[in-house]
Image (tube, rainbow, N blue to C red):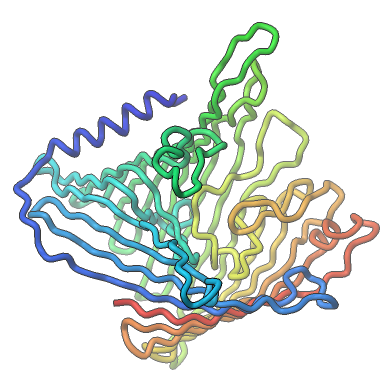
Length: 453
């Protein structure tokens, strides 16, 4: 188990090693990039009661501007600022929301010690594989970034390897730094995210990836009220897994699969007792096949699974704990489903008549893996309570998506989603198996314009 002092020593040591690789820095003019994205939301009947529900209609805008600096042959830096707001959000047209923030800001030291190693230090996005474990959540109006250090290595003739140490929650120093902004210390304890990711190019058509991650939690001290003794409440959520992709362009066929297991234990909640053990499992497998039609088209199938908890053993946590994925789209565009306690049978049909247009539609049939467990949203939070007597059919979703790009840096997008509640949802939102709720379907419509410079 990793304690706080060792983590601090590790991160500090890596930063020191990176700093020992100085080069002659000659600053150049920064290279600018920018993005402006405006999205209209129309959410219909998301309380599943159309008799009293009015459409929820609003628009949001995300503006990003980034700058890349080259300080020499071996050192560069990237800074990206972001503003996110709802259109019409200020009290009046003279109000400043003062909400521009740093989305990314890091220094990248290339070829440290004249090797194939690079160090990335600061605040950064991370994206791996199909983003089922780690992704920047590009669909989000804010997006995800991490604070810490990452080692990157390109291995000639093999692939690449990354290792990182990121700080998730900080309890010390936050109030002092941001005392004027109303920010207080995080009450959930110290948390860190540590991991390694290996990519192997097995052939021209196949790649194999392996990873191991650790979410470390330090909840502070527990006290024995009878003796006054204290102990540190810490836990480690380990996730180990792998991913395989096969792309056969001659057959217009793509195959993919990924699996992960979780182990370790949660922080103890009672002095002298052990924390519950993690026992989660998750997997996905699927294919995409190009149809022999005059216009480029394809069909795909995908199966997703993430374990749930049957509630029979309080010393084990059987629910798969999703980490930091980009869930939107993977399990439906309406974001009612996360990679926890879920079975998803998905079929997709797509069409690309030319370079400007792309259209596709997906159908999802969702079941909970354990009826006794909750159903979880795309962000991982529970939204329906389970019961062992419930049916396991959560619901189904139909998505239709169209994109149009009249030029390289401009894209228009429209998404429509239809959610049909299943027996599990009706029993959870009603009076159980004997008196389920009579729920109506829900719909979402997104219309988005993105300009990238």
